[in-house]
Image 1: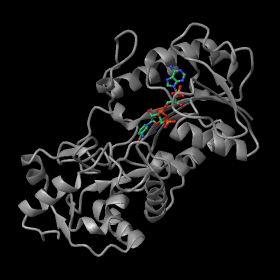
Image 2 (image 1 turned 180 degrees about the vertical axis):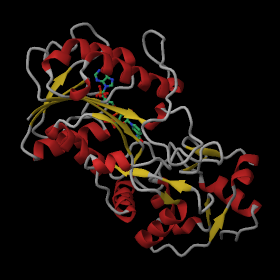
Image 3 (image 1 turned 90 degrees about the vertical axis):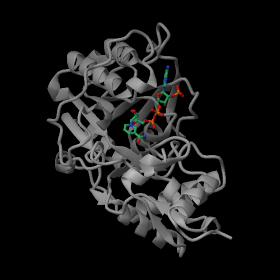
Length: 334
Ligand SMILES: NC(=O)c1ccc[n+]([C@@H]2O[C@H](COP(=O)([O-])OP(=O)(O)OC[C@H]3O[C@@H](n4cnc5c(N)ncnc54)[C@H](OP(=O)(O)O)[C@@H]3O)[C@@H](O)[C@H]2O)c1
């Protein structure tokens, strides 16, 4: 298969490109190279998709599959205009952020999405979900339904994560010296897809020309499962201090991501469905998911490589965690 990855210098795109190459495919990645290098033995066409003629280096070839990772509608449209007629199959990596309702568990691909982003030029990050909707619309307008896969990824976890979100937990449990661990409600839903599983499924879909719209999400879990996997991975015997949604909200702890956040925590009821989507379509189309413990192990390996005590993009600082633990009446740290 001749596979063109629009991206490939970052986390998921690089994992896809590397796996496809190892499965014997001829892989080309088009990217600026700002995010990193393409995997070994993969052709890199250096181009900035905001510039005219960005696709000149790849537009005169036929492709068995093109996989686009962008969330910028203008880049999705320019790629489709230059390449859709040269591609037997098109895959857009979209996101479950497209959905309008994040409060209802068990929704599937038929759920309503937000309105697309209609601005011009570069969409702001606050419009990520709406921008992905516009990328989806552009893809459907340019590619026949039987040649198009819209893969709506849920939270991606595992080795190589650049977001610092899921990895906060294995890293936190690996730093026993920080004392009692503040955790969100243990029964809160958690659903991730391991980057290696997602990449494998995307390559299989490209090979088999799987079409449709699929939520690429893993098995449903609760936070207790993450905690147990982290304890198993690290052997940490520190006390656990469980908090509640209103308690965390009163103290303005940020959910999900960002500085001084509690990653994987999503307050209910508003976000009860964001990590509790149906994975029926994904499973039916061949997505297989490894045990959560394997994702924790791989994530921990990556966290150790990055350095457990580095400044993080997501998660509580030790000082903030200690003060929250103390406020909840948890044990003090020496
Ligand atoms: N992380 C999650 O939990 C999550 C959840 C749901 C969905 N997703 C989706 O999953 C995918 C993740 O992909 P990823 O980790 O490989 O990539 P990414 O971090 O989203 O990077 C996008 C790729 O596009 C390239 N790119 C960006 N601007 C470009 C430009 N102007 N010209 C040419 N290339 C450009 C980047 O390369 P250069 O910078 O080198 O040009 C990079 O390789 C994305 O589609 C994301 O929206 C992620």
